[in-house]
Image (cartoon, rainbow, N blue to C red):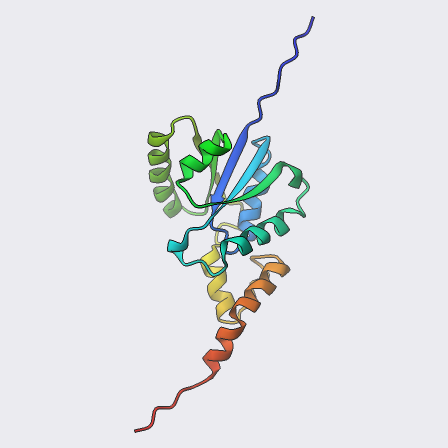
Length: 183
């Protein structure tokens, strides 16, 4: 006689500010869903980084982007504003997923993973390296290109490119005004 087992769902957490979500983020998300039964994308408030978009806008953008993925049903998008390991514990996550673009990312990430493990050893951190063609994409670079009027469509979806254009529309208009100071 066979025994029936209740399948334990492995929950993974992919945290970030996603300001904005890029093709690099989407690559990591798609690959991470193959490793876990459910993937929670944690959108950090992280006001210390001075995000361009508010938390609720970033959550909406991420939801819009993942809706097109074939495995979207296994993904949930949740904002958070607390310690990452506390958030992971609240979710019942067994793994935190981090993307690595370059060796310089690894140094920071290994320190963070070590601190998280010390506080909450029940959750592991795994790293997914960026695939060819996405390893150079960083949200900060994308925002700077958009701010200066460049084409960001190679790095983000058309909808995110439009969101960025709208966000910087007023700034470009202000830049064109030259103030002349007269004595």
